[in-house]
Image (cartoon, rainbow, N blue to C red; front, side):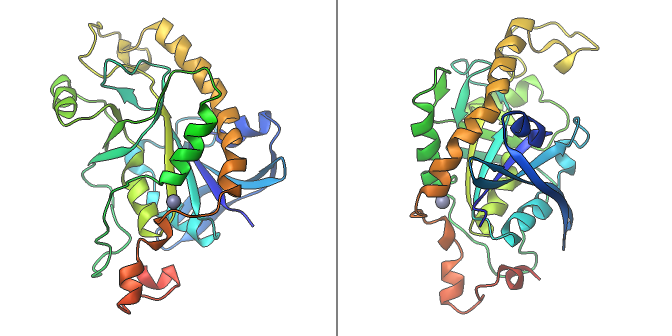
Length: 287
Ligand SMILES: [Zn+2]
């Protein structure tokens, strides 16, 4: 029985395989919203898990607005998986969070515009409270595991999710800072909200890749990543943490699969069930 899926960035199955995880099979799952990205069925220390890469198998081939979150989350739910670990790499708009730092985000500001944000189109369901946004149990397991690591680790952070693919303007970053944002990225919304609609646990660990626009004086440099927004020494710090992420995520697996599911994520739709609006089969909530 597979209990956990890892949604990562690019070609994550290869980085897990390089750490000794075995790939059993791979398939793209057809869903009512189109095909999911390839689902890699893997195993590490006898723990089975599934890996998805949002942006591509080999390179960054699909930018954020074109990631089909509904297909990916549906596919995970249909496999009977109930926990998702999310790996993403946003920018920092908090001077106290440096490129290469780890952040276990605890709140989410959704600034996407056209990404389909719900499974429940034209239905009278899905008015779900969003506090806690992220599964407290997964956050606890990640936090406890990271206590033993030497990386700079922030136990909280507000992730501002924008649509992309462009980066933000200086005034947008100032606005999001005023709103209480710490990180800015293009991945967690609507992904986390869709997971909640299907009563899945969802926890997100991020590493900051750059300081957001306007935080530092950086000349525009055509032809390099982010056009000069990042410095080489910052990239070096990011590369170090990026290289450690597969091992970190594998180290979360035992805790995540062994813990009893005592959180309330699996009851997000309970009142609709009690009211008789929906049954147990999630497909009937949507189709
Ligand atoms: Zn949960």
